[in-house]
Image 1 (cartoon, helix red, strand yellow):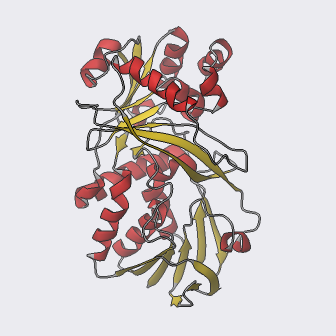
Image 2 (cartoon, one colour):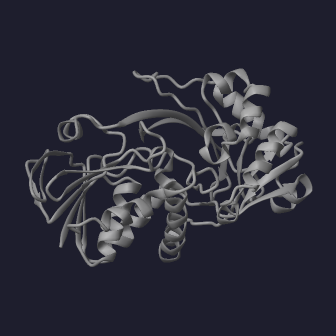
Image 3 (cartoon, one colour):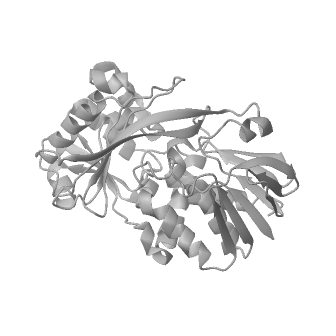
Length: 373
């Protein structure tokens, strides 16, 4: 079987991976020379801890298994089973962490409430002030910038994979055929459109009522910290953002403790991961209203720096990079992804939102299980 994958972000590349694994021939077409979108502009977190129960948690846990197994075969992914810590400062935040640990699925997530001293044993870089922390053993990390190239090189080594960069698919011609902007026709037995946040043009023609929106965020990366940050770090504002933390205790937190004005204005949480070079990737903000701003604002970075420094108990290293990115999210945020058969043997897969890096291996596996593959 010959599969045409359109889009070389992490979702598209994982579709290519599963197709090659099943013995199929794959042609992957990317409008840029290499992927440049949300698949590179993210934390590289395999983030199980905050996922909603049911399908979303099952998808994240399955993806976590797949990431680890792929990481063993593709060292360039930089897979690390580092877990995460969410420090809490007061009784309101602590109550949300306690409610999370009391969930029926807490063991599957690897939740554990630890004291501040225990958190510092897990992650000695946390020398700042906090009362306790929520530990999630199942969280992990990969390196987002080099991971797509590492996966592509592994696919090329199979002998059943062709990569065509710098080509934009303009038309779906029929069963398994597409035409690119060079005028070349690529014919296969199945087509998977993994176009990320590119929702206009061909995507709009094929799925005019697509229930997916675009979300913009800001992030940054620092110089090396100079010591290991042995886990991912979140703050209590992440409780407000991720569905796993919904509880009466969260309602009490929202009612009794307002976010800092900057965090509230930009719909912020702290997430932080150390890269293999020692630098810290830190974010993020959320912007939903279109048209998006074209400028990068400084206030969110200052807020994030203050929160990080309060946990580390030391100044943040020099900020090396700042950037904005856009990803696609289902308008029904309870849905893991939008998967739609838009023509015979043609599937559109988009809208995983902030779950793309976490869930992409399992999302692609589910597509590969569709009839016609």
